[in-house]
Length: 299
Image (cartoon, rainbow, N blue to C red; front, side):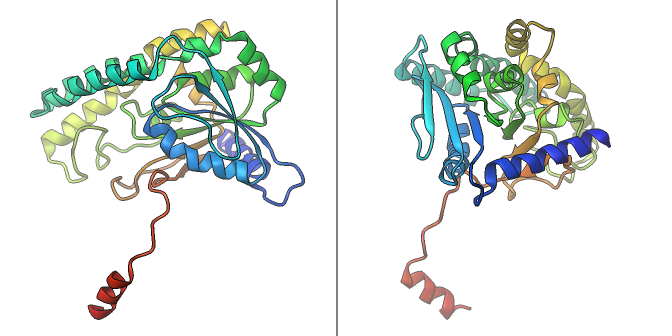
């Protein structure tokens, strides 16, 4: 109960600091995003916070698939030992391998899930150590004296930086193989009607599917350990104490769950969790006049 109250107080404090439009001085927000679609979903939120008068600083590598300067923000970059073209080739090869794996049986799906954890683990730390051990960058971030951090659950660099700077952390988390938001917060996740990720089950499971679903739920802590295996070592070395990404994530002030409302099953949420699905959709264009006439005709 005390932990929940602390999370709620932290949540309202962040809202006041970052979203209050009429304040004389906005908050200072550090943003450490992950590449690809992760950034696509976070970017509208980041730009809106900057537009509302907050000082938003985004930290990205010099070479990335999709990240770059954004409106109403300050962008800091750090050098990396690879190019955008090299990243595209590596991602393309691994994606081809990932898509060609067999998922025709329950056993094959489990093998596919376990192999994908190891494959994606390498991406989580691709730029992590390079950023953290950039002394000039970390000194610059300390000088800013940020009020809060916004990062992606796929990016251990953001989580570790939040712990290093000792500032409240907001995690935008998607539908990843490691259910970090469930494991780290011990959020209720009833296996009787909530299918585990990548099982492709519905909420109406037969006895065999429920059994597999139960076994998959027991594997989730091990899955997070496998997914963040390299990141756990980086976090412990950098923070100079024995820790893990799951432990760091358990201290999150706020979770923004980037779930698609249309595709998810109802699930319990902790007090510091908010669903924000649809961030990648953007604003829709008005319907053409001919479509409006068609709808009126058949109403």
